[in-house]
Structures are given as structure tokens and as C-alpha cells.
Image 1 (spheres, rainbow, N blue to C red):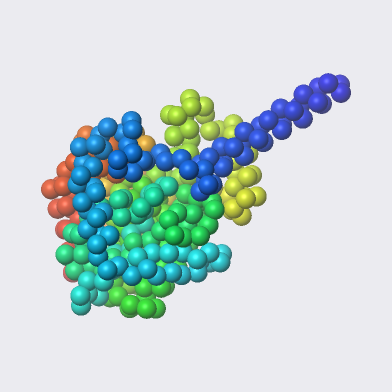
Image 2: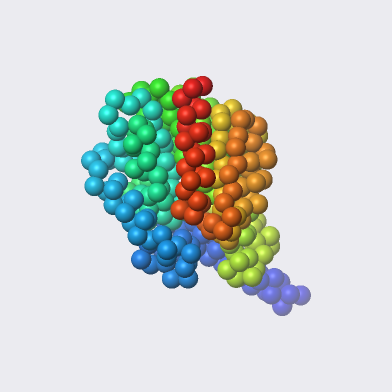
Length: 314
């Protein structure tokens, strides 16, 4: 009997250690793991190689601009950072939320930043919590970050008073934006653009875990949730993009690459199907994760321009 108890305790301890390790790997900013390596360090991500020069040129354009570094305090006391680039005489602002473990937010939107600015939009390019110049240790997969979107909206309204604000997210940034749509957003928020967003933290962690290791997430999920609560103060099941969009009140443009292996296109379709507001879905054959605008700029750019024009006329 004593031997059985010892065995159970050992197995329980090993289980908890494994769950803690998994949580740290996926959420702790100090675990420097890049699922989406940046340009010039994209070993194994050959589809990006053909676009590296274009990506770097777009990012370099933004770096050369006189964007102002701004900060806010989050709902839980973190200092969050962003760069604000005004367009002369504009009362329209795009709030851009980058993807998971992005090292430089301008890379995620490199193909759009100059175009947005030329279209007359002010640009607020945020560093999500636990990324870049923003504080925070643990990545929340949108669960905590959705409240940061509301904080940044309040900042824009308080300092710059735009006529309307458009939310724009890439990958985890898209999930963050979608999860914010069931919160109390002010009337200035006119629409949202979401590129390759996932459905829930469990779904994306499970997908990547299965792809990378062959292990299912289900047996580990209770332990992962336990350590998420203990270390970050919230459960990763605390929000869902798919559930939030059921309460969406603003128009949403969904974009997803049909060859996305990281966030399957099926997740984008599921979010689109659940969305209660006016919506449009653009999928791009042959486009991998975050590559839709690079692979088919005419289709994506046309849809984006039409979407933004429709918001102006609303």
C-alpha cells in the first residue's frame, strides 16, 4: 500500500512538473522560443524567404518615420508601450496588435504600414504585454491582452480624440482583437481587421503541441490551467475569440491563408461563422501563416481598401 501511494505521489509530481514546463515554454517571455522567426533567421520557414526583402523594406520604412513612443498603465499595473505615427490632419487611427512572441511589431505589419499611412490613417503600433518594450512576464494568448486593447482605445480617445478607430490584429493579435469585441467598446471603434487569428488558447496550444511533439494537450490542460492561474492570475480558458465574436457589434474583415500550418484556416472560418456583425472573409490559396497580403496583394489590398472605405461612409 505504501509503495502504491509513493508511486501515485511520484506520478503526480512528474505530471505537475510537466505541466509547469509546458506553461512556461508557451507563456513565459523568458523562454525565448520563436515559433515564427523573424527575417534573416527563418530556418525551416522557406515560404517566407521569397518575401524577406519586401518585409525588411516595409519594416525599415516605419523605423525611419518619426513615430513617438507612448505608454499607458494596464488594468493590472503594467507599463505598456507603443509607437504612434500621426498622419497629417487625420482623425482616423489604426490600432495594430502584433502576433505571438513577435520581436519587432513592425515586421508583422511590414506590408501594410506605409499603405495605411498613405491612406491617411494615424498608426498606433502597440507592443503587447510580455513583448518588446511593454512590461509583463506571461503571454496571455489574448485573455489578458484584450483588456489592454480597451486601455489603448481609452488612451487614443483621451489624447488624440480620433473620429474613428479601426482595430487590426495579426495572429495572436487577431485573437486579442476578437476577444475584445464583447467588451464595452466606445462608439469611436468603427471596425476590425483580423489576419490568421486562432479560436481559443487551448485550441492553438493543442494544435502546436500536437504538431511539434505528437502529444495531445487534453491530459495536460488541467495542469496548464492550474499554473496559468498561479503564475499569471487568470485561466487561459477565460476568453475565446469564437465566443466573443458572437457579441460583435462592429464590422469585421477576416483574412486567412489557406495553407496556414500554424493557425489552420479552419480556425479563421470558425471565427467568421460565429461573428454576429457585418463581416467578410478573404482566404488566400497557397498562403502560409501571416502571408496572405504578401502572396495575393491585389485581392487582400482590394478587400482592405473596400472595407476601410465602407467604414468611412458609415
